[in-house]
Image (cartoon, rainbow, N blue to C red; front, top):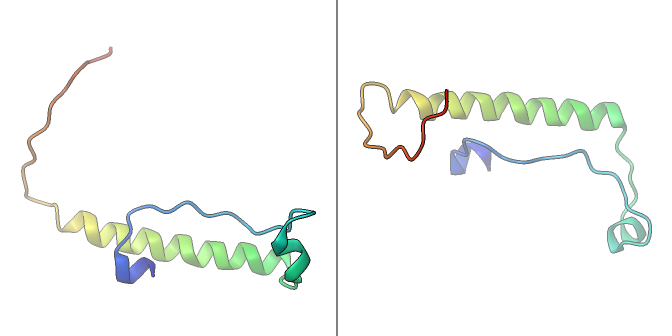
Length: 72
């Protein structure tokens, strides 16, 4: 999905069941914390790659912008 939609940024977290929720009742948390971290890292690596591809399409372009305030 990251590659298909060409996302620049996503928000993701490591799943942990919340007591009393449907997810905790219906689904077993059968993935180790180490595997969850590894999956998140793979997604972050892919996201970084896609974001870099997106940024490269902007090289050499000029954008018009409005500045409301400059802080020193």
